[in-house]
Image 1 (cartoon, rainbow, N blue to C red):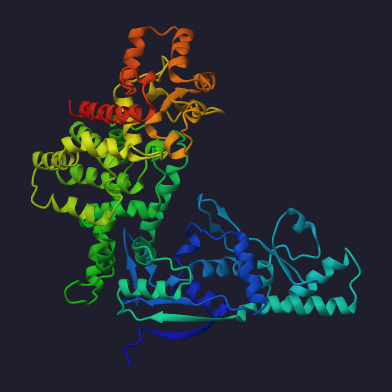
Image 2: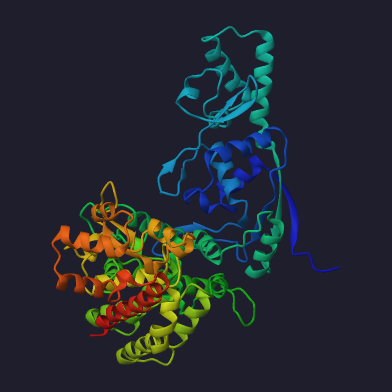
Length: 585
C-alpha cells in the first residue's frame, strides 16, 4: 500500500473558529483582500442550513509549530500548528460572520459581511436597507452567534416582531425552531485533510489540484505570502499597505502612487525574491523560507530565521518609495506614459528587480541606471521577454550576473542581452511579422506608440504631440485620441474586404484626435486626405513629416490595400527602431 500523505480529522464550525482565534490554525486571509461576493457567503450559509456538504478543508502541518518568531523589533507572533491550503474563503466567511469581523475587499476597504435570515420561511438574503427595516428578518445573523444563547436572541426577536404584528403560538414555535437551527450551525461538521509537514510544496500543489473540482493550480506566491503571514505578518502587511497606496492619489506626502501599475502583493514578492535570493523559481524560495535544507531535506528554525532576516532587509529596499519612482522614471524615458501602455506586470516587476540589483549590489549611478533601464524595459516590453516561461527567463538573466563584479560589467551585460534580442533580423523580419495582427493591444503596437513619443511625433493631421494625448492626467468624457482606419471600413467593403481581422489590421490604424476622426467619415484615403489637409491648413512639408513619423509610405493613399499593409508594417518597424536608437544616443 502506498504511503498516505494525509490524515482525516473532523471538526465543527465552533471548534474551527476557536482554533483560529487561538492561533492554532493560521487564517491570514481574515485581514487580506476577500474575493468571495456576499451572495456566495449567503449561499454557503444556506447550504449549511439545509444540511448540504460544502467541501473539504485542506491543512498542512507546520514543520516547526512551537513558540513564536520575532521579526523586526520586539513584535512576537504565535506560530500556528496548521497552515490553510484550501478552504480559506470558506473559513474566512464563517469566521467573519460568526465573529462579526470585517473583511478587506479587493479595493482594500474594510467591510462587514451582512447576511440576513427570515425565520418565517427560512430564507437567507444579502442584507440591505429594506431588509434592515423588515422586522420579519434578522438583518445580520452575526447577532445570533454573539448572543449568550439562542433563547435570549429568540426572546428579543419575538418582542421586536410583536411590535409589528401578532405572533401566534404556532408562529412562535416555527420561528423559534428556525432560529435554533441557525444558532446550531456552530456544530456543522467539516472534514479536514491534514497533510504531513514532510510533504513538500510540489506534492501539496498536486493534492490541491486533484481534490479541487475547479482544477485551479496553487500559486507558489500564495505559499510564500501564507508563510509571511505565519512568521512575519508585518512583512505581508507592509506589502499590502504599499499596494493600497499605489491606488490612492497622494495627499502631498511621499507615496508609491503612479499611473503605470497597481501591483498586488504577489507581484512585489517577485521583486523581493529576485533581489534578496537571486531566484525566480518561487518553489525553491518557499522551501528556503520554511527553513528547509535543499540538500538534507531537514528543517531548521535557525535557518528559517536567517532567511526571513534577508527577506526583511530586501523588502525594505523594494518598498522604498524613492527607489520605486526612480525606476518608473526609466519607463517615462523609454516613451511609456501610463498603464494603457503596460502589457505585462511580470515584465515590469522583473525589470524593477534588475534595476534594484544594479543600484544596490553594483552601485550604478542614477543617470546611468535610468538610461540602461529605459533601453532594457523598451526591449522587455517589445519582445514580451517574460511572457513565456517567465521564471526560467529571469533565472537565466540572473545567472548572467553571477560573474559580474562591477558597474561596467553590469551595464555591459544588460546591453548585450538587449542587443542579442534586437538584431537586424528582428527589425527587418520578426517585428514586421508581429505587426501583422488585428489585436488592439500588442507588444509591437505599444512599442510603436512609445517610439512616437520618443520621436516627438505629432498626431496625424494635428499640432498636438502624441505624448501629450497619452498623458494619463488628461481625462475627458470621450477619449482624447482614437485609432482610425486609414482605409475606412465602407471603402474596403466596396473592394470586397469585409473580414474584421483584415479591416482592423494594426497597419490600417493610426492615432487621431477624435474631432478629426468624426470628420473623416468613410471616404477613400485619396479623397479624405486632401480634404483634411485643406481644412486644417497643413502644408505639404508638414504632411510629409507627419507621414514619415506615422510610417505612411509615399503615395499610400492610392496603393492596393494588401500592398499598403506590407509596406506600412515595414515602415512601422523602422519607426520603432528609430525610437529605440534615440535611447542609445
